[in-house]
Image 1 (tube, rainbow, N blue to C red):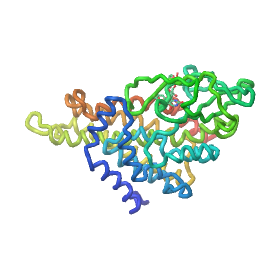
Image 2 (spheres, rainbow, N blue to C red; image 1 turned 90 degrees about the vertical axis):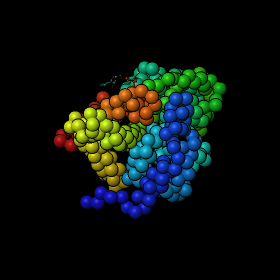
Image 3 (tube, rainbow, N blue to C red; image 1 turned 180 degrees about the vertical axis):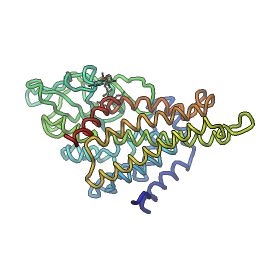
Image 4 (tube, helix red, strand yellow; image 1 turned 120 degrees about the vertical axis):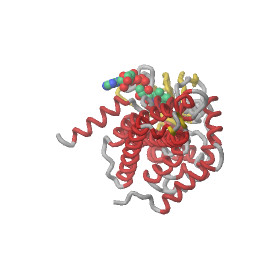
Length: 377
Ligand SMILES: Cc1cc2nc3c(=O)[nH]c(=O)nc-3n(C[C@H](O)[C@H](O)[C@H](O)COP(=O)(O)OP(=O)(O)OC[C@H]3O[C@@H](n4cnc5c(N)ncnc54)[C@H](O)[C@@H]3O)c2cc1C
């Protein structure tokens, strides 16, 4: 069994590592986090290296690579402290290519390589979080136009993206859930930013749609197919969150290890205390498990063998395991970690949010558990 990356994969990962070492990005990330700003400069730099082309098919001038390469890129960026959670939409062109009409595809793909925030998907509402049964946003047809009305909440990137794909129910038949490709500069749209515990380099907002006029050509995918589109793309979204969790934990672990070897208390480095070593053993086990799980899932996806519960399992496991790693790292850093602006403090806040966004831990358990049992029915 081959565990090493190929020469080509390693070269790509090394390019991201070199970029991360080329300047003190941490000062920039810290500024962006404090001011809740998207780190445009950083995303531009990694897109120049081809980050957003990794999964893009060659016919669209992409690199046509797979999840293994994406995993290696996320690992290199995360390990060096990069806020990879701001990148979730960039490998998502597959959905647009599959569901979008030509005009929609062109609008989105025109942004490849720019590092711009382009698109996100709006499902969640005050009455529809883990379950979409009580979704209230509707669309109705009048005089050849389509009108969208409703209120979406917790919408990532929505203060900046020019387009949102909005899920709504047909007023005439509420069992029909459909998605609409909405130009966010249209009349009738109001945005209200939300303040978050973590993940502050990406915006989050309430969105209000008041009789927003759409064309039939703004339909995204097929009418009535919104659930199926969501299900198709959830795996990738969950996998990306798990990759971020792992990379963030790796960075915290290395910061803590360097500190533990250097920090002298009672005449010796704290790394020599057995209680410290226990924490590093637990952290190393978790990192090894996360890495093995993620590369295996990536390989399975690339080879058409992805299991239905695999990505939910990874999101659930990695969000818990990375939280443990970062918590232990913070304990090692002690006063230095919890005061001032150490990046591990930021990671601690960020990882907590990931256990809710993109589907809660509990919903991941339900999916992973259901599919684990299905094999034995
Ligand atoms: C930072 C952030 C960014 C987000 N970005 C987006 C976005 O871009 N687009 C979007 O559409 N949504 C987004 N969301 C919404 C996110 O997916 C939801 O918050 C999440 O699905 C949970 O919904 P809720 O907060 O309403 O909690 P609820 O669904 O009300 O759940 C409350 C609690 O009950 C538990 N629970 C609910 N149902 C069950 C059940 N059947 N069994 C066991 N426990 C259950 C939950 O796990 C949770 O612990 C984002 C959320 C956050 C926090």
